[in-house]
Length: 76
Image (cartoon, rainbow, N blue to C red; front, side):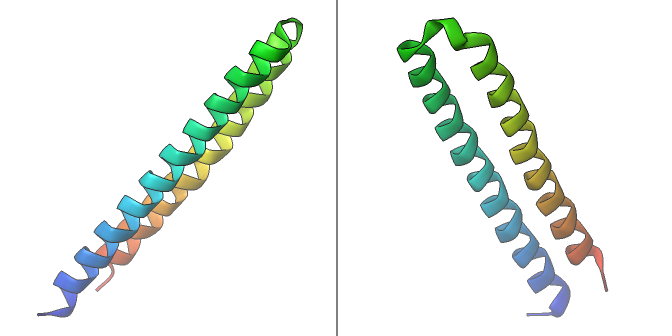
């Protein structure tokens, strides 16, 4: 197996793990926000704002991981 094929394989595994981690993180975040809103409906706006900021940070990290995987796969 040549090095380029291994690079693409490693980038695919890394990208998959990044997406899986981001999905799990946002899922836990949304579940916790729903629980918090159920417990204290008057704080819905604050909870939503905090959730959106945290989700954006999680997506930013996932996007960064995807870009790194692409860069490593195409580097020869």
